[in-house]
Length: 284
Image 1 (cartoon, rainbow, N blue to C red):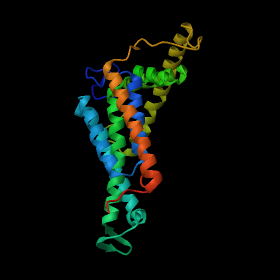
Image 2: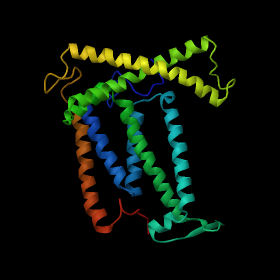
Image 3: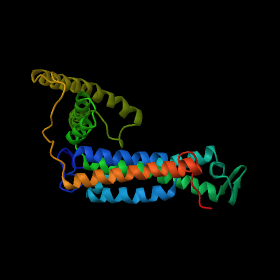
Image 4: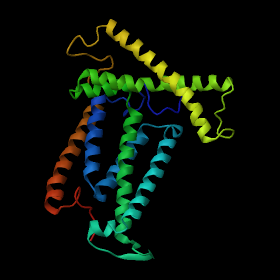
């Protein structure tokens, strides 16, 4: 398998990767909710640092994550710039004050509040990315299915999720095999020798056999599951299911603590001072 593929199919050796699926899902779920509802930099900065530490704890390969990192940084930057172009006064409108740094042209001016608001938006998206990244790097399809099942998701849905993730390497391998076979037959797919439209046209010649191959694999898997009487019972077990360890209990305790902090934050900040989900926090 390509060592640059992000998803792992065998649990890694770090403590975070050895956690049970339910522990990872609980920790991720609470943190994502906390990040999504908050526009408070006092929350986002610690969340970013904590989740970055979890990413480092998985000991990731730079080759695995650099493509995702570049993509998120570029799209996030474009998103912030477009937000400013559409509404240059979005910062003062959200914060309620305006201190212009310098005028650009017309209604376009750069204020301290706008820079702060756009910076918080950028940080918010990066927090969600980093939180999702450590989860993707540390979990396997089997752990994900087992964790979802522990959360009382129907096991048929859990199986679909696991099989879908496990099929990705096979689809990529089939794509590369078909691509190489067509190039050996004289089909030009090199971007230095063929135009974009020509390569798109030739790519369709890869997609069609790839779809047919995928359907054939799905039929094989479905037949194998029918022969094993899959779905005949209301419950199922998982080979990877193990008793919770001390590290699992620690992760669940952190998730519970974050949930209590989240509730306290919503009650004490959002409801009383109207800062957070409905309005950005700004130092006065």
